[in-house]
Image (cartoon, rainbow, N blue to C red; front, side):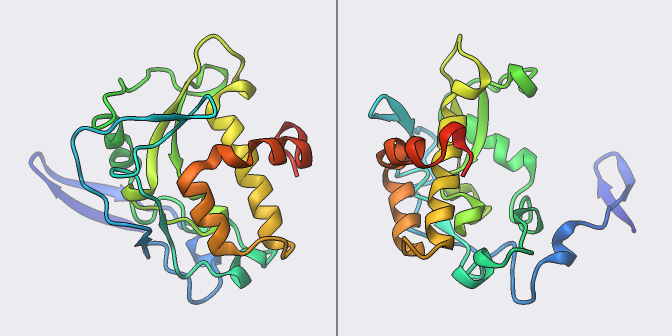
Length: 199
């Protein structure tokens, strides 16, 4: 599909690929968002430390859920988070979160050189929203291998909580609020249940 976009430089034609959104079950809205609390929209956000790991500033990144991602949807083996990813915000909008946190945008931030992740505080696999009140730059620590970066540690927590929700061992709302409040509280359990972050 081609779409004309009018810019200050004239008309640019973009080819829009068919996305995985067509594969989402009916009733899912990739732009839906309900914040856990209002964000302050502050231009000054400060990462906090809990249990030796960074957590976002709750006034800037309180976390938000996508109410159309119900327990039933998340338990459906055919559901893929790709059908809602980047539907509410673009990659450029997500990258704008570096500014309020006063974190320089890293260059060559891919593969083994990745030092930061624009992280969904409540992960999409836990019904998190793809909106800026649920996204923060999670960076560091320097001088360690990729699997030891903070965002990889949090990935393990996300996988653990998703497994707990899918198997009925934890309520979805409790998991969403818990990870938004302090994702580090689940680190020990996640490391035991999901070695290497794999459940």
